[in-house]
Image (tube, rainbow, N blue to C red; front, side):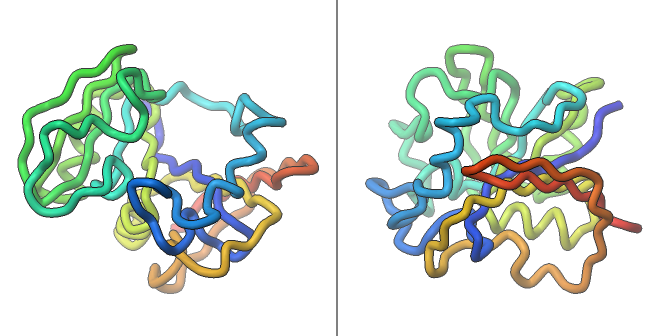
Length: 194
């Protein structure tokens, strides 16, 4: 059985997204600067493990709208999202599953983080479940003690405020498992101590 992990990029001041998120700036104003390291390290994380069998994300990561769904919205990624696996989107509003090209199907879960994780684990089979974000979703899983691994890719930029995944999670302890770095990012792998 795989693990539940979170693998996200943060700025040096700890933000996954900068302030001012909008349709035009999904990562906030200046937030895309944190992702520049992907150009020099396109394979993302240097830490490999089980393949990801399913993802969980918050509604804000899926799209900009709030309240009832705009059914014409299919996500930020176009017709073929990068996930290639089932994605469970946390929401207060029901929506039918949304199959996309490349093997991604978005499932919309209205009964909480534990239900989303249970569905993702079942879909992942022996693969890992990745908590993809946004920051609020990461915080919820951290507070609930449901993460087995946290990987932070720290970009050497500050964004001056925004969405921080480690805000208001309480007093947690982690073991540093691995570190790797390059000129554009430092990769840190942690396991929560229980």
